[in-house]
Image (cartoon, rainbow, N blue to C red; front, side, top):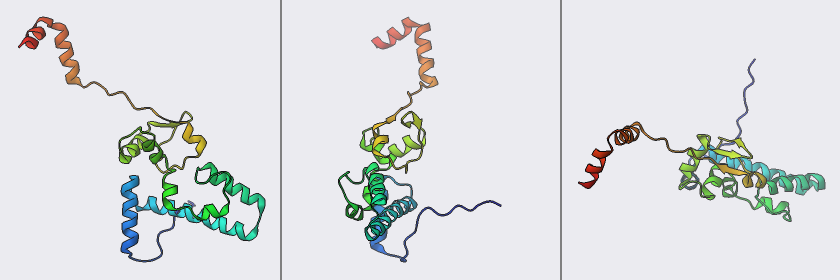
Length: 180
């Protein structure tokens, strides 16, 4: 029997909402997302972090608090000295700023976020020597330091090669053409 995978995100519970739709469309445009599913994934990740922070505030379990704060600090969402209350103040854009696609664009490897997405999906982005081709991958602070982009060298077209070959065979003709 094949195991069905659980959906990794929650869709909005309310029906049609013009304000929500406009906010999601703006996020898609600003962060170069493929579709609303990626917005929902970021919102679900944030919702899970907040839920865990609220639970730990109520329970007052110090070990689990430290683990959560270290994990969220590792993602670069809060500072090391922050508390659980700071996790509750995070928003969706904080999560979207930690995506690999956004980091590639922010570092200047691409002119647009869409170009950054293309670099990632085409396999030109490496983290610590490992190829990563998932634009939605959440980078830790350590991984962001190891980020590198290896852009391929442009290949010469056949036309350019033919012109170069003709120039090598008939150097006198090309000099005459340049004088005209």
